[in-house]
Length: 338
Image (cartoon, rainbow, N blue to C red; front, top):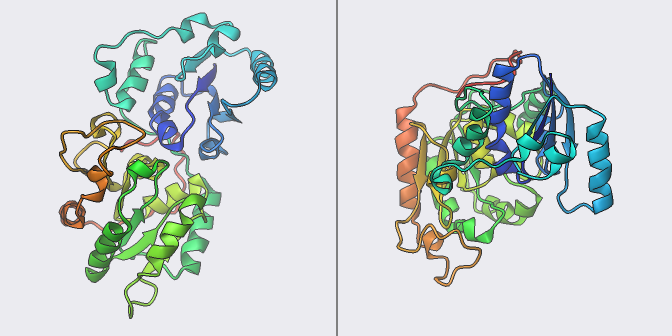
């Protein structure tokens, strides 16, 4: 069976759709899957077992480019189209039923993963919250070399901190991250900062605040990893601390504990769920507002104290006493349950 999955654009949004891939492979274990994803997220699926083709789809591309894409997809003669964007693509490929959007009760109140899996449920696919995050030999070897070059030793207790976010309204204070990182360093944890190229200035300023006399206790991987390599880094750590962002969703998807700092967005619809995850937020009358601008000086994030984040981190670290280990063998299964 040949299946086309039309997924989303932003990295975090795409990660939240990967349970659709995992459940499709459970239902159709020998399916040949083509994934259409945003350019920033497409690299997550390169070289993944079971995925025939990954197409980076820019929704801002010209009409001519979009039409060439449709013609290319028509030649594939897909047996099934799963369109999570709810576009005209299924109709143009001769699968009109796949374009229908069935009303869901309280849709806006549902977690994003539940919304996506509801799409599969109406297609007769039994679903559960499992994620599909490919793990390749290349990513494992690259991360081995990268961490070694940063003098991060196997078996160290690593905490990844991710201070960046696509929206400035989702960012927490530099002082807050610095305070938490210092406190965790004092408890013997190794701090690894991550982020994209846009976060290098912020992470650079934080690195300048590293405690003196602790050698290389703080390390920056900002801008140095692909998505698959970042996933590999996140598999090897004790805890992720960061804002509502793509790396937060990726940490959850690979089974790592998370402390997520939320402000204007609603954690009930997108935050990591389960006993190994904590959401830290201020309970303000205006939050969550889901707005792009704030008339209240960003109080939901600016007034959130580091002690709240530290309390959540300590609770999880004390709860999970088992050291992180890594299986050197790359699993052959297409999906993983977390």
